[in-house]
Length: 461
Picture 1 (cartoon, rainbow, N blue to C red):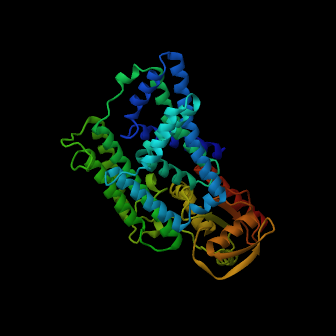
Picture 2 (cartoon, helix red, strand yellow):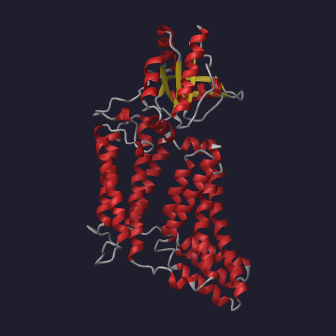
Protein backbone atom coordinates (compact mmCIF):
# COMPACT_ATOMS: atom_id res chain seq x y z
CA UNK A 1 0.00 0.00 0.00
CA UNK A 2 2.67 2.62 0.83
CA UNK A 3 4.22 1.96 -2.60
CA UNK A 4 1.06 2.99 -4.45
CA UNK A 5 0.74 6.00 -2.17
CA UNK A 6 4.28 7.08 -2.91
CA UNK A 7 3.73 6.66 -6.68
CA UNK A 8 0.57 8.74 -6.47
CA UNK A 9 2.54 11.30 -4.51
CA UNK A 10 5.27 11.27 -7.22
CA UNK A 11 2.63 11.68 -9.94
CA UNK A 12 1.21 14.74 -8.15
CA UNK A 13 4.71 16.13 -7.62
CA UNK A 14 5.20 15.80 -11.40
CA UNK A 15 1.83 17.43 -12.02
CA UNK A 16 2.78 20.35 -9.80
CA UNK A 17 6.14 20.67 -11.59
CA UNK A 18 4.33 20.73 -14.93
CA UNK A 19 1.92 23.43 -13.74
CA UNK A 20 4.81 25.56 -12.52
CA UNK A 21 6.64 25.05 -15.83
CA UNK A 22 3.52 26.13 -17.69
CA UNK A 23 3.60 29.58 -16.10
CA UNK A 24 7.23 30.30 -16.95
CA UNK A 25 8.26 32.83 -19.63
CA UNK A 26 9.45 30.12 -22.05
CA UNK A 27 6.22 28.12 -22.08
CA UNK A 28 3.25 30.44 -21.49
CA UNK A 29 3.84 32.73 -24.52
CA UNK A 30 4.08 29.63 -26.77
CA UNK A 31 0.43 28.69 -26.07
CA UNK A 32 -1.21 31.43 -28.21
CA UNK A 33 1.28 30.78 -31.04
CA UNK A 34 0.52 27.06 -31.01
CA UNK A 35 -3.23 27.55 -30.87
CA UNK A 36 -3.26 30.00 -33.77
CA UNK A 37 -1.11 27.50 -35.72
CA UNK A 38 -3.75 24.78 -35.29
CA UNK A 39 -6.60 27.08 -36.22
CA UNK A 40 -4.80 28.43 -39.30
CA UNK A 41 -3.93 24.93 -40.47
CA UNK A 42 -7.51 23.77 -40.13
CA UNK A 43 -10.47 25.88 -40.97
CA UNK A 44 -12.50 22.90 -39.78
CA UNK A 45 -12.94 22.94 -35.99
CA UNK A 46 -13.26 19.17 -35.55
CA UNK A 47 -9.96 18.57 -37.28
CA UNK A 48 -8.30 21.26 -35.16
CA UNK A 49 -9.59 19.58 -32.00
CA UNK A 50 -8.35 16.19 -33.17
CA UNK A 51 -4.90 17.63 -33.91
CA UNK A 52 -4.81 19.48 -30.58
CA UNK A 53 -5.45 16.21 -28.74
CA UNK A 54 -2.72 14.50 -30.80
CA UNK A 55 -0.38 17.37 -29.88
CA UNK A 56 -1.20 16.93 -26.17
CA UNK A 57 -0.62 13.17 -26.37
CA UNK A 58 2.70 13.77 -28.20
CA UNK A 59 3.91 16.01 -25.36
CA UNK A 60 3.04 13.26 -22.86
CA UNK A 61 4.84 10.59 -24.96
CA UNK A 62 8.01 12.71 -25.25
CA UNK A 63 8.34 13.40 -21.52
CA UNK A 64 7.36 9.87 -20.43
CA UNK A 65 10.00 8.49 -22.81
CA UNK A 66 12.52 10.72 -21.00
CA UNK A 67 11.41 9.21 -17.65
CA UNK A 68 11.75 5.68 -19.07
CA UNK A 69 15.25 6.40 -20.39
CA UNK A 70 16.36 7.54 -16.91
CA UNK A 71 14.87 4.36 -15.37
CA UNK A 72 16.44 2.03 -17.92
CA UNK A 73 19.85 3.71 -17.80
CA UNK A 74 20.13 3.43 -14.04
CA UNK A 75 17.82 0.62 -12.84
CA UNK A 76 16.28 0.50 -9.35
CA UNK A 77 19.28 -0.66 -7.32
CA UNK A 78 21.51 1.91 -9.02
CA UNK A 79 18.92 4.61 -8.32
CA UNK A 80 18.96 3.57 -4.67
CA UNK A 81 22.76 3.60 -4.55
CA UNK A 82 22.84 6.99 -6.31
CA UNK A 83 20.63 8.48 -3.63
CA UNK A 84 23.44 8.10 -1.05
CA UNK A 85 26.48 8.29 -3.33
CA UNK A 86 28.44 11.40 -2.33
CA UNK A 87 29.77 12.22 -5.78
CA UNK A 88 26.29 12.10 -7.30
CA UNK A 89 24.81 14.10 -4.45
CA UNK A 90 27.47 16.79 -4.90
CA UNK A 91 26.79 16.80 -8.66
CA UNK A 92 23.04 17.10 -8.00
CA UNK A 93 23.75 19.93 -5.57
CA UNK A 94 25.90 21.80 -8.14
CA UNK A 95 23.32 21.11 -10.86
CA UNK A 96 20.54 22.64 -8.76
CA UNK A 97 22.73 25.67 -7.94
CA UNK A 98 23.32 26.16 -11.70
CA UNK A 99 19.58 25.82 -12.35
CA UNK A 100 18.85 28.34 -9.60
CA UNK A 101 21.39 30.82 -11.05
CA UNK A 102 19.73 30.39 -14.45
CA UNK A 103 16.30 31.12 -12.94
CA UNK A 104 17.74 34.21 -11.19
CA UNK A 105 18.78 35.48 -14.62
CA UNK A 106 22.55 34.84 -14.66
CA UNK A 107 22.29 32.98 -18.01
CA UNK A 108 19.84 30.94 -20.08
CA UNK A 109 20.20 27.16 -20.32
CA UNK A 110 19.17 26.46 -23.91
CA UNK A 111 19.63 23.55 -26.26
CA UNK A 112 21.36 24.31 -29.60
CA UNK A 113 18.97 26.36 -31.75
CA UNK A 114 19.94 24.31 -34.82
CA UNK A 115 18.12 21.34 -33.22
CA UNK A 116 14.80 23.11 -32.87
CA UNK A 117 15.20 24.80 -36.29
CA UNK A 118 15.78 21.44 -37.98
CA UNK A 119 12.80 19.87 -36.26
CA UNK A 120 10.64 22.93 -36.98
CA UNK A 121 11.58 22.73 -40.64
CA UNK A 122 10.74 19.01 -40.73
CA UNK A 123 7.32 19.67 -39.16
CA UNK A 124 6.56 22.20 -41.93
CA UNK A 125 7.58 19.71 -44.62
CA UNK A 126 5.68 16.71 -43.30
CA UNK A 127 1.95 16.47 -42.92
CA UNK A 128 -0.37 14.73 -40.49
CA UNK A 129 0.65 13.00 -37.28
CA UNK A 130 4.44 13.23 -37.73
CA UNK A 131 4.38 17.01 -38.15
CA UNK A 132 2.32 17.43 -34.97
CA UNK A 133 4.68 15.16 -33.07
CA UNK A 134 7.66 17.20 -34.36
CA UNK A 135 5.91 20.38 -33.27
CA UNK A 136 5.50 18.95 -29.77
CA UNK A 137 9.19 18.06 -29.88
CA UNK A 138 10.07 21.63 -30.91
CA UNK A 139 8.07 22.90 -27.92
CA UNK A 140 10.10 20.58 -25.63
CA UNK A 141 13.38 21.92 -27.02
CA UNK A 142 12.43 25.61 -27.15
CA UNK A 143 11.02 25.66 -23.63
CA UNK A 144 14.02 23.78 -22.20
CA UNK A 145 15.55 26.83 -20.50
CA UNK A 146 12.50 26.89 -18.16
CA UNK A 147 11.43 23.25 -18.10
CA UNK A 148 14.98 21.82 -17.90
CA UNK A 149 15.69 22.92 -14.33
CA UNK A 150 12.23 21.74 -13.19
CA UNK A 151 12.55 18.35 -14.93
CA UNK A 152 16.11 17.99 -13.64
CA UNK A 153 14.94 18.73 -10.12
CA UNK A 154 12.02 16.27 -10.43
CA UNK A 155 14.14 13.45 -11.84
CA UNK A 156 16.84 13.96 -9.20
CA UNK A 157 14.30 14.00 -6.35
CA UNK A 158 12.37 11.02 -7.72
CA UNK A 159 15.45 8.92 -8.59
CA UNK A 160 16.44 8.86 -4.95
CA UNK A 161 13.16 7.11 -4.03
CA UNK A 162 14.78 3.98 -5.49
CA UNK A 163 11.60 2.87 -7.29
CA UNK A 164 12.17 1.83 -10.90
CA UNK A 165 8.91 3.28 -12.28
CA UNK A 166 9.16 6.53 -10.29
CA UNK A 167 10.91 8.67 -12.96
CA UNK A 168 8.35 7.60 -15.57
CA UNK A 169 5.39 8.34 -13.27
CA UNK A 170 6.91 11.73 -12.36
CA UNK A 171 7.34 12.64 -16.01
CA UNK A 172 3.78 11.46 -16.78
CA UNK A 173 2.44 13.93 -14.20
CA UNK A 174 4.68 16.68 -15.57
CA UNK A 175 3.62 16.08 -19.17
CA UNK A 176 -0.10 15.87 -18.37
CA UNK A 177 0.03 19.27 -16.66
CA UNK A 178 1.84 20.75 -19.68
CA UNK A 179 -0.25 19.05 -22.36
CA UNK A 180 -3.80 19.60 -21.06
CA UNK A 181 -3.78 23.44 -21.32
CA UNK A 182 -2.33 23.33 -24.85
CA UNK A 183 -5.04 20.90 -25.96
CA UNK A 184 -7.78 22.84 -24.11
CA UNK A 185 -6.86 26.23 -25.57
CA UNK A 186 -6.71 24.69 -29.04
CA UNK A 187 -10.23 23.27 -28.56
CA UNK A 188 -11.67 26.46 -27.06
CA UNK A 189 -9.65 29.35 -28.52
CA UNK A 190 -11.95 31.93 -26.85
CA UNK A 191 -10.50 30.87 -23.48
CA UNK A 192 -7.25 32.51 -24.53
CA UNK A 193 -8.79 35.98 -24.26
CA UNK A 194 -9.41 35.48 -20.54
CA UNK A 195 -5.98 33.86 -19.85
CA UNK A 196 -3.55 36.11 -17.95
CA UNK A 197 -1.12 37.99 -20.24
CA UNK A 198 2.54 37.12 -19.98
CA UNK A 199 4.58 39.72 -18.14
CA UNK A 200 6.73 40.49 -15.12
CA UNK A 201 4.83 38.03 -12.89
CA UNK A 202 6.37 35.16 -14.85
CA UNK A 203 9.89 36.22 -14.00
CA UNK A 204 8.89 36.48 -10.33
CA UNK A 205 7.71 32.85 -10.53
CA UNK A 206 11.05 31.82 -12.06
CA UNK A 207 12.99 33.57 -9.29
CA UNK A 208 10.82 31.91 -6.59
CA UNK A 209 11.59 28.51 -8.17
CA UNK A 210 15.27 29.48 -8.17
CA UNK A 211 15.16 30.06 -4.39
CA UNK A 212 13.45 26.68 -3.87
CA UNK A 213 16.05 24.88 -6.02
CA UNK A 214 18.80 26.55 -3.98
CA UNK A 215 17.23 25.30 -0.73
CA UNK A 216 17.02 21.74 -2.07
CA UNK A 217 20.59 21.84 -3.39
CA UNK A 218 21.66 21.97 0.28
CA UNK A 219 19.67 18.80 1.02
CA UNK A 220 21.79 16.89 -1.51
CA UNK A 221 25.04 18.36 -0.19
CA UNK A 222 23.93 17.39 3.33
CA UNK A 223 23.44 13.70 2.34
CA UNK A 224 27.01 13.53 0.98
CA UNK A 225 28.32 15.38 4.03
CA UNK A 226 26.66 12.90 6.42
CA UNK A 227 27.64 9.73 4.53
CA UNK A 228 31.31 10.72 4.50
CA UNK A 229 31.32 12.41 7.92
CA UNK A 230 32.87 15.71 6.72
CA UNK A 231 30.80 17.88 9.11
CA UNK A 232 30.76 20.94 6.83
CA UNK A 233 26.98 21.15 6.85
CA UNK A 234 25.91 20.28 10.39
CA UNK A 235 22.34 20.96 11.42
CA UNK A 236 22.85 24.55 12.57
CA UNK A 237 24.81 25.48 9.41
CA UNK A 238 22.06 23.94 7.26
CA UNK A 239 19.30 25.74 9.19
CA UNK A 240 21.16 29.07 9.09
CA UNK A 241 21.37 28.81 5.29
CA UNK A 242 17.70 27.87 4.96
CA UNK A 243 16.67 30.76 7.24
CA UNK A 244 18.66 33.18 5.02
CA UNK A 245 17.30 31.67 1.76
CA UNK A 246 13.63 31.83 2.82
CA UNK A 247 14.16 35.23 4.47
CA UNK A 248 15.62 36.62 1.22
CA UNK A 249 12.79 35.03 -0.77
CA UNK A 250 10.30 36.88 1.45
CA UNK A 251 12.16 40.18 0.99
CA UNK A 252 12.34 39.64 -2.79
CA UNK A 253 8.57 39.05 -2.95
CA UNK A 254 8.07 42.31 -1.02
CA UNK A 255 10.05 44.08 -3.77
CA UNK A 256 13.11 44.91 -1.62
CA UNK A 257 15.55 43.96 -4.41
CA UNK A 258 15.47 42.87 -8.06
CA UNK A 259 17.19 40.38 -10.35
CA UNK A 260 18.44 41.15 -13.91
CA UNK A 261 15.23 40.14 -15.76
CA UNK A 262 12.76 41.82 -13.40
CA UNK A 263 10.68 44.81 -14.53
CA UNK A 264 12.04 48.22 -13.52
CA UNK A 265 9.27 49.48 -11.25
CA UNK A 266 8.23 46.07 -9.91
CA UNK A 267 5.47 46.33 -7.30
CA UNK A 268 4.29 43.66 -4.87
CA UNK A 269 0.80 42.37 -5.58
CA UNK A 270 -1.51 40.61 -3.10
CA UNK A 271 -0.58 36.97 -3.92
CA UNK A 272 3.11 37.91 -3.65
CA UNK A 273 2.48 39.57 -0.30
CA UNK A 274 0.88 36.41 1.12
CA UNK A 275 3.71 34.28 -0.30
CA UNK A 276 6.22 36.64 1.33
CA UNK A 277 4.34 36.28 4.61
CA UNK A 278 4.58 32.48 4.37
CA UNK A 279 8.26 32.54 3.45
CA UNK A 280 9.27 34.96 6.23
CA UNK A 281 7.17 33.05 8.80
CA UNK A 282 8.86 29.81 7.73
CA UNK A 283 12.27 31.45 8.18
CA UNK A 284 11.26 32.62 11.68
CA UNK A 285 9.90 29.14 12.53
CA UNK A 286 13.35 27.65 11.89
CA UNK A 287 15.24 30.10 14.14
CA UNK A 288 14.74 28.15 17.43
CA UNK A 289 16.19 25.12 15.60
CA UNK A 290 19.60 26.79 15.91
CA UNK A 291 19.38 26.08 19.65
CA UNK A 292 18.08 22.54 19.13
CA UNK A 293 14.27 22.86 18.76
CA UNK A 294 13.10 19.68 16.95
CA UNK A 295 11.37 21.50 13.97
CA UNK A 296 9.15 18.62 12.82
CA UNK A 297 8.26 20.43 9.58
CA UNK A 298 11.83 20.30 8.26
CA UNK A 299 13.10 17.16 10.05
CA UNK A 300 12.97 15.17 6.79
CA UNK A 301 15.37 17.59 5.07
CA UNK A 302 17.64 18.91 7.81
CA UNK A 303 20.59 16.86 9.06
CA UNK A 304 19.82 14.84 12.22
CA UNK A 305 19.93 16.45 15.67
CA UNK A 306 23.10 14.61 16.67
CA UNK A 307 25.15 16.73 14.21
CA UNK A 308 24.30 19.85 16.18
CA UNK A 309 27.00 21.08 18.58
CA UNK A 310 24.85 23.44 20.63
CA UNK A 311 21.65 21.65 21.57
CA UNK A 312 19.42 22.71 24.46
CA UNK A 313 16.77 20.08 23.60
CA UNK A 314 16.95 17.05 25.89
CA UNK A 315 14.00 14.84 24.84
CA UNK A 316 15.94 13.07 22.10
CA UNK A 317 16.44 9.35 21.58
CA UNK A 318 20.05 8.59 20.68
CA UNK A 319 21.19 5.10 19.73
CA UNK A 320 23.48 3.68 22.41
CA UNK A 321 25.42 1.75 19.79
CA UNK A 322 26.17 2.07 16.09
CA UNK A 323 27.86 -1.32 15.99
CA UNK A 324 25.87 -4.57 16.02
CA UNK A 325 28.34 -6.78 17.93
CA UNK A 326 29.07 -4.19 20.64
CA UNK A 327 25.32 -3.54 21.17
CA UNK A 328 24.51 -7.26 21.41
CA UNK A 329 27.28 -7.77 24.00
CA UNK A 330 25.92 -4.90 26.14
CA UNK A 331 22.36 -6.27 25.91
CA UNK A 332 23.51 -9.71 27.13
CA UNK A 333 25.26 -8.13 30.12
CA UNK A 334 22.22 -6.01 31.03
CA UNK A 335 19.64 -8.71 30.25
CA UNK A 336 17.63 -6.45 27.91
CA UNK A 337 16.08 -7.04 24.49
CA UNK A 338 17.57 -5.23 21.48
CA UNK A 339 16.01 -2.94 18.91
CA UNK A 340 18.01 -2.88 15.69
CA UNK A 341 17.25 0.23 13.64
CA UNK A 342 18.42 -0.12 10.03
CA UNK A 343 18.69 3.48 8.89
CA UNK A 344 20.62 5.72 6.51
CA UNK A 345 22.06 9.22 6.48
CA UNK A 346 20.15 9.92 3.27
CA UNK A 347 16.92 8.29 4.48
CA UNK A 348 14.12 10.89 4.61
CA UNK A 349 11.55 8.54 6.16
CA UNK A 350 14.00 7.59 8.95
CA UNK A 351 14.25 11.26 9.97
CA UNK A 352 10.45 11.57 9.83
CA UNK A 353 10.02 8.58 12.15
CA UNK A 354 12.61 9.95 14.59
CA UNK A 355 10.87 13.35 14.65
CA UNK A 356 7.26 12.11 14.77
CA UNK A 357 7.41 8.83 16.74
CA UNK A 358 10.62 8.72 18.78
CA UNK A 359 9.91 12.14 20.32
CA UNK A 360 6.77 10.72 22.00
CA UNK A 361 7.66 10.49 25.72
CA UNK A 362 6.37 6.89 26.11
CA UNK A 363 8.25 5.66 23.05
CA UNK A 364 11.42 7.52 24.11
CA UNK A 365 11.17 6.06 27.61
CA UNK A 366 10.74 2.53 26.26
CA UNK A 367 13.70 2.82 23.85
CA UNK A 368 16.00 4.45 26.41
CA UNK A 369 15.11 2.32 29.47
CA UNK A 370 13.78 -1.07 28.36
CA UNK A 371 15.74 -1.76 25.17
CA UNK A 372 19.29 -1.49 23.91
CA UNK A 373 18.97 0.59 20.74
CA UNK A 374 21.45 -0.14 17.95
CA UNK A 375 21.29 2.12 14.87
CA UNK A 376 23.04 0.72 11.79
CA UNK A 377 23.64 3.17 8.92
CA UNK A 378 23.60 1.26 5.63
CA UNK A 379 25.14 4.20 3.73
CA UNK A 380 28.06 4.87 6.11
CA UNK A 381 31.09 5.26 3.82
CA UNK A 382 33.72 4.71 6.54
CA UNK A 383 36.05 1.98 5.22
CA UNK A 384 36.21 -1.31 7.16
CA UNK A 385 39.62 -2.10 8.77
CA UNK A 386 39.94 -4.78 6.08
CA UNK A 387 37.50 -5.79 3.29
CA UNK A 388 35.33 -8.86 4.00
CA UNK A 389 34.26 -11.43 1.40
CA UNK A 390 30.80 -12.91 1.94
CA UNK A 391 28.27 -15.03 0.07
CA UNK A 392 25.11 -13.03 -0.61
CA UNK A 393 21.52 -14.32 -0.45
CA UNK A 394 21.56 -15.13 -4.19
CA UNK A 395 24.77 -17.18 -3.83
CA UNK A 396 27.16 -14.63 -5.35
CA UNK A 397 30.47 -13.70 -3.71
CA UNK A 398 30.60 -10.07 -2.58
CA UNK A 399 33.30 -7.91 -1.04
CA UNK A 400 32.19 -5.57 1.74
CA UNK A 401 34.44 -2.51 1.84
CA UNK A 402 32.61 0.01 4.04
CA UNK A 403 30.74 -0.11 7.35
CA UNK A 404 27.54 0.65 5.39
CA UNK A 405 28.13 -2.38 3.13
CA UNK A 406 28.42 -4.56 6.23
CA UNK A 407 25.12 -3.39 7.77
CA UNK A 408 23.33 -3.51 4.43
CA UNK A 409 24.49 -7.13 3.99
CA UNK A 410 23.43 -7.99 7.57
CA UNK A 411 19.95 -6.59 6.89
CA UNK A 412 19.53 -8.53 3.63
CA UNK A 413 21.06 -11.77 4.87
CA UNK A 414 19.54 -11.97 8.35
CA UNK A 415 16.25 -10.08 7.93
CA UNK A 416 15.58 -10.46 4.19
CA UNK A 417 14.97 -6.80 3.41
CA UNK A 418 16.87 -3.80 2.09
CA UNK A 419 14.48 -0.91 2.79
CA UNK A 420 15.04 1.72 5.47
CA UNK A 421 13.87 2.45 8.10
CA UNK A 422 13.44 -1.11 9.35
CA UNK A 423 13.00 -1.78 13.08
CA UNK A 424 13.66 -5.31 14.35
CA UNK A 425 13.28 -6.49 17.96
CA UNK A 426 15.57 -9.40 18.86
CA UNK A 427 16.55 -11.37 21.97
CA UNK A 428 20.11 -11.93 23.23
CA UNK A 429 20.62 -14.83 20.80
CA UNK A 430 19.65 -12.64 17.87
CA UNK A 431 16.25 -14.31 17.38
CA UNK A 432 13.28 -12.09 16.39
CA UNK A 433 10.80 -11.32 19.20
CA UNK A 434 7.98 -10.19 16.89
CA UNK A 435 7.46 -8.98 13.29
CA UNK A 436 9.50 -6.00 12.07
CA UNK A 437 8.19 -2.47 11.42
CA UNK A 438 9.03 0.06 8.75
CA UNK A 439 7.87 3.62 8.04
CA UNK A 440 4.52 4.24 9.77
CA UNK A 441 3.92 7.27 11.99
CA UNK A 442 1.20 5.59 14.14
CA UNK A 443 2.53 6.03 17.71
CA UNK A 444 0.01 3.62 19.33
CA UNK A 445 0.94 0.83 16.91
CA UNK A 446 4.63 1.51 17.56
CA UNK A 447 4.08 1.26 21.32
CA UNK A 448 2.20 -2.03 20.85
CA UNK A 449 5.10 -3.32 18.75
CA UNK A 450 7.63 -2.41 21.49
CA UNK A 451 5.40 -3.84 24.26
CA UNK A 452 4.86 -7.15 22.42
CA UNK A 453 8.61 -7.52 21.94
CA UNK A 454 9.23 -6.83 25.64
CA UNK A 455 6.52 -9.31 26.79
CA UNK A 456 7.86 -12.03 24.48
CA UNK A 457 11.41 -11.40 25.77
CA UNK A 458 10.29 -11.69 29.41
CA UNK A 459 8.28 -14.86 28.70
CA UNK A 460 11.35 -16.49 27.14
CA UNK A 461 13.52 -15.88 30.19
